[in-house]
Amino acid sequence: MKLIEYLLMRGELTNDVTSLIQVRAPQRNKWEGGVDALEHALKMESDVTKSIRTVIKACEDDPEFNDYHLVDYLTGEFLEEQYKGQRDLAGKASTLKKMLDRNSALGEFIFDKKLMGMDI
Image (tube, rainbow, N blue to C red):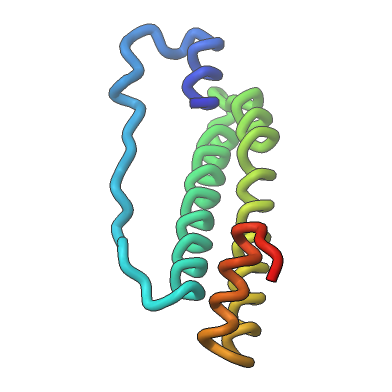
């Protein structure tokens, strides 16, 4: 929604924006465990980051039609958030792997409780 609001503010969108809003179902809905789910989420975050970087590259490539305002907006609003999300998911996946190495069933149980903010 932030990007659509930005385009509306700039006057780039003058018609119906519902065609731009597409929510796709996940390609996958079953995982072998928590680590698999976290690694899949990390891959999805990486794909989003790559897409944002592709848009940024397209904005910077053409010297006649470069759009430094959009590059600044994407970098400030989205990229930092993506990087934080990737670091968070990678850290959680690493922590869960270590917990599973010591005691698989109990490790996943404790990890779930900590994610929900519960004390054990």
